[in-house]
Image (cartoon, rainbow, N blue to C red):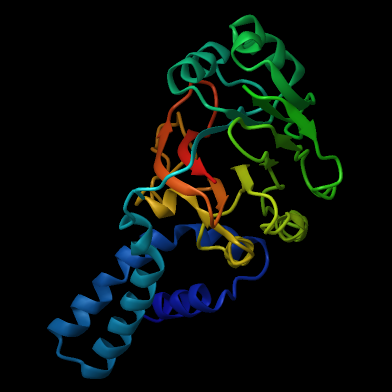
Length: 299
C-alpha cells in the first residue's frame, strides 16, 4: 500500500524529480488501477486505518486519471479546423499511409516530428505536395527535424519558440473566415538521463495562450498529463483536446511493437476558446508513434 500512497502524493503534488521518477510517472493510470488491490485487501481484512489510507490513495489517483475518459464532445460553433500530428521515427513512417490518411481526414494542418529530407521527398512524391502545398520545414537527418504542412498559407514565426530541444517550427495559419491562428509543432527531448533538464526547459519555454491570437500546440510532447511540467503548461491557458472528449487515456506510444501502446505522450493542446468535437488515433506502419487526429472549431 505504501508505494501507491507515495505515488498518489507525488502525482497530486507534482513532486517527480529527475529522469527515472519522471519516466515512471507516465504509468499513473496503471497505478490507479493497481491501487484497488491493497484497498480490497485492507477492506476484507477489516483494517480500518489501512482501509482509510488505501481509499484516499485510490481516490486521489482516480480523480487524477478518470476525467480523461469521461469527457463529452462539445456542441460548439465556429470555423472547422482539423489537426493531424505524427512522429515519423527518423523519417521511417510509411509515406503513402500518411498521405492516404491526409486524403481521408483532410487536416488543415499536419504537424510532423522526426522529419527527414527523404521523408519530405517521399511524401511529396505520394501526393502531399498537391494536398498541402504550404509548409514550414526544418527537416534534418536525425530525430531533430520537424515540419508543418498546411492547406492554407503560412507565415513563419521564427521567434515564438526559443531553440530548446528538437526543432519546433511555429507559423501563423491564414485560416479562411476570420483571424489567422498560431500553430506550434512540439517536440522536446525525451526526459532520459540528463536530458530531463532540457525537457523541462523546453516545456516551460513553449508560449502561453494569448488573448489576441488563438494558439494551438501539437506534436510529441514526450510527456503525459501526469507530468507536472505538462500540467503547468496547460495552466497557462490551454486544454488537452483528447482529455476534453474522453479520449485522454488512449495510448499513443510505442506503436507497431509486440506489446500494444501503453502511454499517451502525443497531444493536441488548444486555446481555451477552441472547441473540440472529436479526437482519434491511427496506426501508421514504420513508426513507434500513433497519429493523433483532432477535429476542432476555432473562433
